[in-house]
Image 1: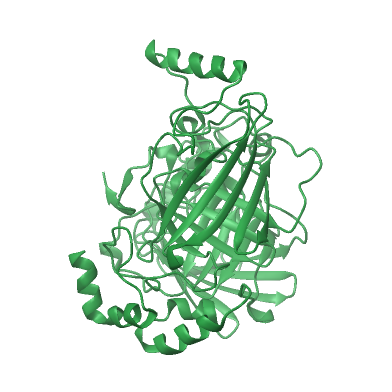
Image 2: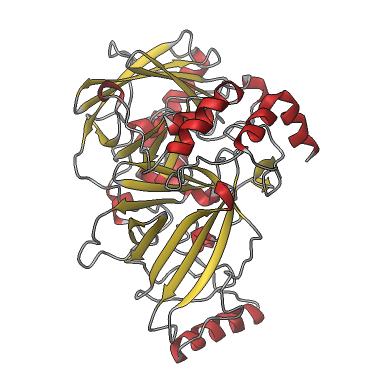
Length: 239
Length: 250
């Protein structure tokens, strides 16, 4: 209640100030069980070359198909120069969702925060924000994410990406016009599902979706991952 | 200030008046995202904070360099000499490594505190450093040395006490380059002051190898209801710089 109040403006002022005045101990927000994604999660399965939910290659335009083929060839030849993580630059979004490293989720009434162990990269999903228009955004690696609860599903829209990253390790391309929709929900207490829809008319002939699940990792803490250091963990895997 | 007044006319002024508070302490030059003052719950530190009066030399309560041991003095002198000679020693932040504790708390970039059951997390804009502070837990026995160390926290009244050990010796205490070793032990006492408009961090720094006795630094941070943490990618020479905490293009 108190924490909720902090973010509601003018309308609730009287109520909030009143309630806050009576507060004693710290009120830690606990989401209702079905919406409680808090904890550390690890992706299930290998998503180094993502496919649609039907298991098909995404509907690439012909130009994008050529770029993809070149990336696959470069990877096979051992020279994946397209791959930003070779130089410790970010995976970008959504590729970071597919990394085989733990993700910690933290929840507040107006924000869901994902802390990725890999590159200790945070992603904030703001529940109190409307995304700016795409052409008014300064593109970056992780974009900007705004979400809302649709029943017990967290629906997230993200945009504002640069085009330096790929969607997966294999090299599926995207443009700065890409928009990502996600629907995250718990399948059971220990399984989180994310259905990710990619809309990018410059690269794909139509929107397409892929699906991943994450398994809860009780007691696991995120380790320190430092790409630019001689990091044994980083060297062990290139997700 | 003019912008702040403009936002007041949009109705936020009502809230400030109702809460019985004057204008926020530091520069506020963007539309408010959160309430103009942080929650009245003294233990609710959640939200975005921004250092006041950033000083590359951490604000030691001594007002001067810390009391070096011989080894500490030699390390400091060597670093200063290297810089003078034109071949400065690069510190952790130059390699895009995590900044370490306490240095990350003395950074001219915003930080966001997130509190959940069992953990307090600090997301720093600078080089996307993340601190995990596990609440009401003990340190593991002999934690492996890391840049950010092992941090545990507990409440003493309305003060969050954070104890950090397990730090490696590849970071500096602050930007001016006070060196420390692996014995560094940092205890922070963090509490809200000024009716929730600011946060105080009283930092106790102990490292018997480098300092003859524990010393203290004090940093305050302003409540910044107008800020969200921006993307900062050290590995591409962070192309955006903050102006009053807001990201602006270089």
